[in-house]
Image (tube, rainbow, N blue to C red; front, side, top):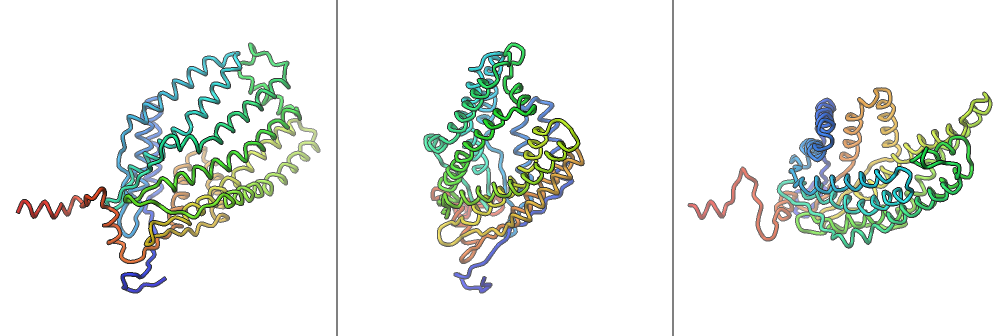
Length: 393
């Protein structure tokens, strides 16, 4: 990396995060109390307050990020509309199997819209030196890329239907939630129900891989920074490799522990061998998910660029990130959740400080060019508009 003063020299800028755990913990406590006290009405406000704190404490080249307040009316309207749909289907769940299908399909239909709404609000409310970020994906493209969500919904509807057929002794009048009875069957050692659950997981993996790839490509292809398109070097085989490695991490963590728990319970003549193995397998997902998150973050941000003058690299190490997440998880469990804000802050710091923004030429010049929106230059409020000052003079 050259530190020359030449206009074409490439310089690297690493973001800094100056947030403090105690401040963020107090903010999380305040927003949680406000959300619970208003029965979820203040959730958008709480979400925005936390994002504003993280952005205002993140610096790039000495300038902080801004997370301006977006229009929360659309979020509230969509949020309560979704709650009404869930409430309507919940009333029909008492002994009526079609209501479960309605609940799953309504969730599959609403998920792409809420995903796009969240992304659009996140990016459009973000500023750095007056540079605007936009997410301009249209709804048709979003739902076309969301077909794997429908595949997931149909897969698990089929699994639940097969489980219900396999457990005819369940009385819907006595057990309205048929899935509770099926979970009980699995805990008692029903191998057929367990095999159906494993089949559902196996069929869900291709849908999850394709969905992650589609949404990542949609995100990078629809992202605009200062009106310019973001370029990326993403390919579907890269996502397949990440998922294969994730499954390998899960197997390396889960299989030995599951066998140990199974033989220990069997040796001491304790019941619930299947439930113990399932519990161990669930906790074995946590390091695998942390590994997957680190690899996906590095793949996404390590290949982004803007024109030929800006690119981003990422040196996040998956093993170090997994170790960090496991320590945070242990402390969160030991403190009954009180350590969760500190854990979130540590994870954010590890991610943001692993990035490096490489700029060819002068960063201030590129920032001034990107802050031009629709031919109008955005001037900082402390400098004013030079043309207007000249006109007034």
